[in-house]
Image (cartoon, rainbow, N blue to C red; front, side):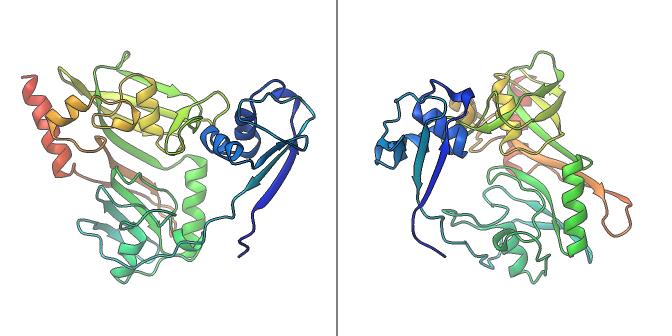
Length: 313
């Protein structure tokens, strides 16, 4: 693999006339404004051949050139047992796991913790070889800080058919979330596009030109300080529920990244977002029959729920 920097040069489209360099870079090359600003500050951005600062303005038709760092080295799967991860279902084509909090779906640059596929490898499972080497068999993901159900493909046909079901939005993905306050209305749909946060690489946000994202929610129970919601996803964007709940000004309890009240989280003993993948249904890739699986709340979330319920009694 080459370790040389990559240089990319594109003309500024008409729609970006007058934009700042960092904003134009983010739109044209697909990274955050924070990253764009870092590249400009390090002298790796040229506008019509001259060094450009992040706050310079671009003109339509001007040539914007950026020197990108080399891609990171590929990550590898480490077979390592995952304490607390349980196998809910296993057959020749799929394995359904109940993922504990603090575990990633697959390896990624900078992640040093355990992973679902590393745990499956340690337990002797053979999974599909489809997909990138570090995420073979992975057809969908859960955040590290979100617990609950995931399906992993074991056969090649299962990988292909499950990926198609996720693309066609026929998979039933249900979550329960304890959110701050009381959404108004208590049953509704958030239809708001999501993409990377313009200023923070680690966050996502509702942005005008993001990817279509649809979340349906329905209140199960309301308490004095919070509401328990049943949430169904049509799309599966990164951090989708967390971003959409924050956009409603009712972030998941404990989700400090997206604006949750740290005082409430501390009082309830929650050290992560209160969000759990409780149900997963799909057509089995072997014969097309509908299969569905459910997961109980883990101990930390169940304890917080009982506490907030008791406070409202």
